[in-house]
Amino acid sequence: MRKDWILISIIGLILVIGLGLIGYLKLSKKEVAANPLESSQNQEVAGEQASSIDYFADDAKVMYFYSDFCHWCQEEKKVLEELGKEGYKVKSMDVGEKPEFGQQYNISGTPTFVAENGERLVGFQTIGQLKPWLEQHK
Image (cartoon, rainbow, N blue to C red):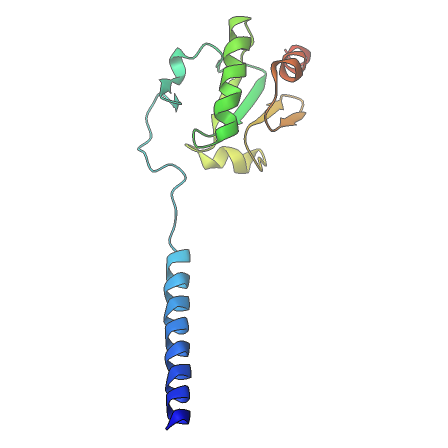
């Protein structure tokens, strides 16, 4: 009788694990949207319209790749605000809103700065690190 209970327990455990694995595989195949919010003409950065941000300019020589969902991009925003007061501008490249930007420019993480000549700064940059680099790529 004891052998029967052991056999039944093993079969039950196999069934539970199998069903759990099937459920996990089905969930992992679902497509996840990079940004669940609808796209708009004016991009938003941390709740502000890009058109009202004084450090973004479409004609800037340096592209700034970021996502509103990135913690370090939010920290970088403070640095860019300070540098924007001094006239430094970057081109807005929101990979959260438009993932194709990341693919097109081979961006593996945010924040990332890319100059016209292809030079890159990857990761969070302090004012002391970013200002001379932006000056060099005006």
